[in-house]
Amino acid sequence: MKVRTDRIKEMAAAAAADQGLHQTLLAAAGRFRQLRQGGVAAFDDLEKARDQGRRVKERCLAELDRLLPRLEKQVRAAGGRVHWARDAAAARAIILGLARARGVKRVVKGKSMMSEEVGLNQALEQDGLEVFETDLGEYIVQLAQESPSHILAPAIHKNKQEIAALFADKLGVDYTDDPEELTRIARRVLRQKFLQADMGITGGNFAIAESGTLALFENEGNIRMSTTLPRLHVALIGIEKVVETYRDFDVLRKLLTISATGQKLSTYLSLITGPRRDGELEGPDEFHLVLLDNGRSRILADPLLRQSLYCLRCGACLNVCPVYQCIGGHSYGWVYSGPIGCLLNTQLLPRGQGGPAPFACTLCGACAAVCPVKIDHPKVMLHLRWLMAEDPAWPLPRPPAARLGLSLYAWLATRPAGFRSASALARLLAPIAAPGGKARLTPPAISRWGRTRRLPRWQRPFSQRWPGLRRRLGNREEPS
Image 1 (cartoon, helix red, strand yellow):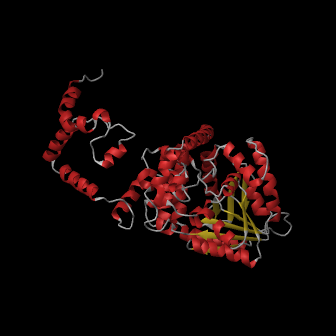
Image 2: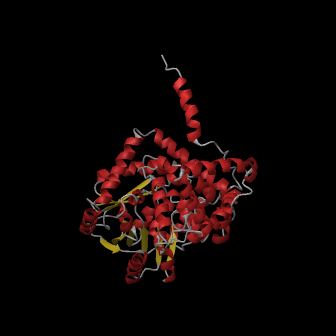
Image 3: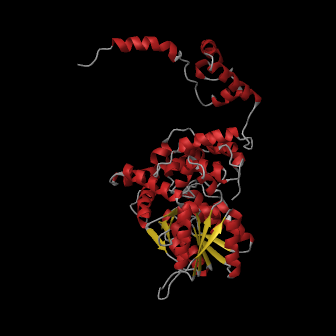
């Protein structure tokens, strides 16, 4: 997938001005929040489960050096093969090699953000293969030649009228904006693709080390078709998806489905252990598991940043993020969007290419409040900001005026008398520089920020207000 993180500000500004996009995103996010609230209401003790889920992720990530070889051993024992990919190029090469060696012509894909991360579709198509996304949302964005804009709902940025026009144009069907009819149209088209496919490619929600089992959640049935009809099934997952036992899997399973769609269990849950065995009626002749690093080991090495790898890809943080709901997913410039996108894009992309996304966060904490495994997004975001600001490789704006202003503030902040004098002067000048709270006669950085906001009223320093407050508190009568 093309990296456009250097255009985050430009794309965000355009998306923020798109009222139609706002309405579509707000409606969709509202539905997801209602679904989650309904599921949470039926949950016995969500906070206890979130604590337990976080402990599972902490332990499994800390023991990856033991769990990954165990997973490989069990997959092989079940008749499958395991491939190790250091980066995106290696993952593409492995899957292309499998396709070429087996004469694959047509590929059906289950929904997989990992394949977006490595740019798999483009590589397969450039090699002459026909590739068909089979998740309805992924199929829509593939027809539109776009990328997914949401971890859970790839086409969340499109309304039904836009999808209807797309189907009429690309598939040659009569225009209809009835959701059920649009779904039937997609099913008719994709059914033939399933029957003709030589290879099925999926991601994976979890890989269970004790048995070599791949777990896949879905609500449409397309993933199950992609893993059973083609003779060759290839699963591409990040190394952070490995858990040790079925007990660990069960803890995270509940949290994932509740946080994503409010369900106790998704409509389809496929547990795949190796290829089809003798006597079984369905399943592939070959099963291949590709384990991808692509920067994850580097993230794992930092005790604070490794929280980013706890993510279950439920999408709950996107559905409560005020920034995401204003600018949509494409504005983030790469595969992942929303709060978790700010963290993952910045760390997974090569050093200096992640863009300024962490600086777009408001640090409101809504994401951390709903995260099923209690990722502290704001804390990690601040740490990333610090790392980026200290690293000259990051293309962050460092204008001389800003450096001078910060240096002056640092000088004043460490000299109480100077700070008090500057504060008094600022209070006197505030009504002139920002009449009615509107920043006018201020430096460009402040005036740009103030175009859509009112500056807060300047208050007396706390040190000057404290003596009076203390007297009033001292005079307050104690309750009887």
